[in-house]
Length: 356
Image (cartoon, rainbow, N blue to C red; front, top):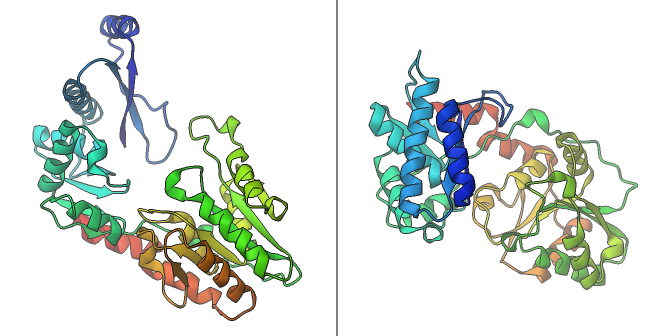
């Protein structure tokens, strides 16, 4: 894996750092930025913040190609894989042309082309139209790409859902009815609708229940992880005493919480794929999700319920039906549906076909 760490700085720092790098020849590739397997080779890309987007992109492409040559002195890859179009697809396209190697792109990010400057937009289009193959993690993603007039035909490559990391737990009939969500404080997640649905559910549910909210917005500094945003919404909708807030959990702890819930809810406005939803399904849990795109590929009458965006009333009503067993689900059937779509064997088969 090749990863450029891009950073914009003021003129003084840019000149000093550039001079030091030139004297010490320190533009080297290293393995210190991200420890993982396969190895992630990182390198620094420093931009003067007032440089034009066109020149920044040109410099980044050049440094990516230099780093590529640095790590391939004794071998050559057969294929370059870009994990998204912006800007990995642009860099992969440049390396491909310079070194005469085929490249592919699988789009994972929210695809909003007009979010980028014109130069990047053109770079994304050219990359997708010149890639050996383009993949998308959902039919929603494919639609978003094609709506922008890009001349390609993306193949659907659902994300790997490792069934070995999530299990179905033995039911505990003595506990409260438990609702779980995994989210963060962004408009795209529409947390307001989630808490509004709890408020409405509280008025029609005659027995006690608990809502578990997992998530925070401290992506850059996990030590600052907190649930303040969700706590304010819970108080606003008078369900604070029904909620358990968990800003940070390990993968194992998330698995445990998903196993313990009765239903998983996602109220997103848009989802490229919906990993958390499918993790809950690997635990055999029924889901209630908004028609947010990527998650819809896995929803059938046997696995969960689709509701319209912002339809808190429908969420509350369906929660009651699940609680009262009016909607009945087979945990093994829910789990098997995800494994058949994107479990380990299915994913390997899809990727092998994609690379051929």
